[in-house]
Length: 302
Length: 216
Image (cartoon, rainbow over all chains, first blue to last red; front, side):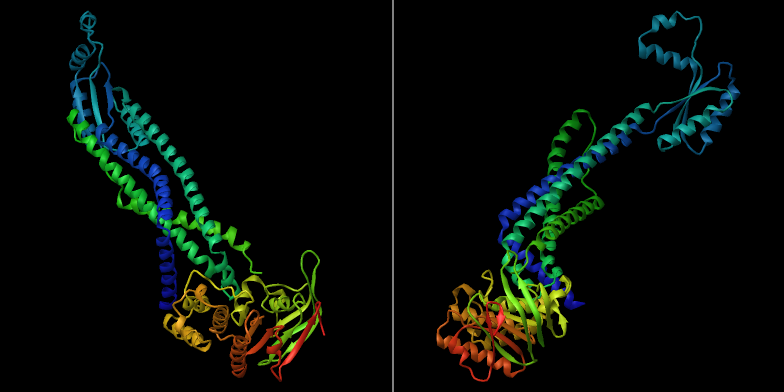
């Protein structure tokens, strides 16, 4: 066990030495990988923040319940209690028809027209603030409340939430496509790097085969190299994203102040950062594996 | 130890290197393989290490038909055979020491144990003082001896040498033959291809002579 570990450690040391020997070319590779990965990672981060922002500002969608015109005061009281005790309801406000008319006058500027009406056409209403839930749960709640006695209509004011969710889904799909394409680019970069390495180490591979090296032995340093390059590329991507975030937050602070609000972009979470690194390690390893599988068999000693 | 039965080898392009070669080498035997260049000496050695495969006939090494050996089994055959190449096949990107270390790394030897073995092998060929040099700084004879050190460090049962004294003057050639003799004495099986008359003077050694792919 310790011997096997020491062998792998030895391979890793040799790989790092080789990386250090061609550090400029290696750095450029790592930079290319880092930039390629930072684009989808950065977009993902912006989406995450947008989602947080939406949750913060929308609070919860509202359900408006319009009562029948002939509802009496005791009906209103009973409904009010019933709604307040409902497990999916966070809060309830009662809006009388007189208040509603007053609001309409003020907000639409149609006071002359409304003043000309013989009677108030608006019903009494409850504004229900549901507890947080997904769109489907809200719709079910709306249906349930609509069936209460003396309620003529229930409206869910969540059309904009649907739109936003659709927009975020669109954004996420965009990130997914971009990430897939740039992952291919990362694999291609590693594939080519390893191909060049195999070509320059042709003699060594040939001699190693002649004196009894297994394919695994020959393959191992290249796979380690691919994985290590992927890891460094991932770290580079993380640094690019985090540095960009800090720069943006500086500007955002000034902007938020103008709107008298406090808003900052949150950095990648620990879990997301680890995922990024693991993913880039895996892609580097995969690119190296493909390259080795393709090129190693072409070198046969003569 | 090594047994050829009616071995034919034809290269792509139609050139026939070996035509129905049969012979046996006993365990611990030392054997010279002679003949003009192009007679098929190198091909014969390559068949033993399965670097080339016969078109017909069988090549047995340790009762194993190496002509039909699968790719995955090749490394383990070759670990048992030390090969001294005509063109040395040394690696110039590393020191003398690391060149000799390579076979031990391949077999997964422990670090300290392999250091001892490398020095013992270098000592045997008289290159211990040059262990840190790059092989490019060595003379032709020294490079040849380095190649020998690499072939023996793993203590293989069989040693194959392809023209080990080619291009060397008589003194160097005699040194190298002395090294081979010492291996013979500790029980290794040796097959040495050469057309060097001064080497062939060595008495009591069986000789196989190839002429245009046929054993004489």
